[in-house]
Image (cartoon, rainbow, N blue to C red):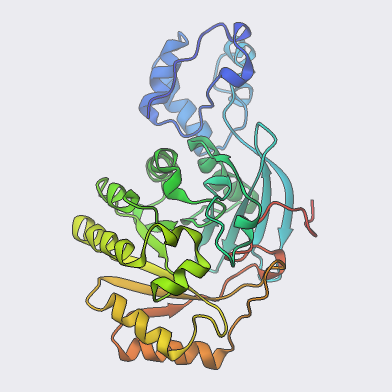
Length: 357
């Protein structure tokens, strides 16, 4: 996870060839400033200005020598710009962020009385094409870099003028198809931005062998697995990747994750009216998870225009909950925030819609 050395003569290097500094650790930044002929203590200053003062340009770091600031104007920190901003009635904010190559990604800030959660994207688009998800309808363009993931958290923190307490990797993209950058971003969010490991959650639909590989890092984060079906036949209908990665294999890998890390797995389950929300489905789900160190997070479906799935009514939702509880399965219901801004779970996409600048 080292920072590629930068040359002192910035003028001789094209801007797109200079790696941004955001996401780099204190040790990496210290090594870099020394490569630039500056004393080592400048690394600590740079780290503070990037992560605490959230500076967007080296030219704005007033404690640096004027001459060096003038010479370093083209060295990118790696911050995005807010392209559009939409605020829902519940104060959830969805951002369309423009990256250096003009790609657009989505980030969501979710405030409550006691905390501010950021839902970050890990890819531009998503290749998984889950049938009920808006993001997958737009296709996939590329992975996000370490700095582009960390930037989303700093952007929300800056806009809300409030410290971010929790980060969920549940935005655009499949995190375990971008493992290197996700791991690097998790490290930076924890060690540089200062967010506790147990306040970080990575959500995956399940990629063969990747959960097992992820477990080897023995992180204290929360792993959330998007299950959405209690049997293989139904899961194949909803999640195309399930055709080559059966539910049985996914659950076996999740059990390994628990054994290796000692951390329980959260299973996300979107409730689709008449599709996967019947009591018999709850019983099948309980059978899959019996004896498993896990928690089920039920998410009533959030509508999108492309498909005609419906959200079950509250009676149906509560009946599903009761079956799981009777089977001694830990369960909670998450009613998504940000519906009016198309910022809720499954709704993320990069169309402007009715966003306010």
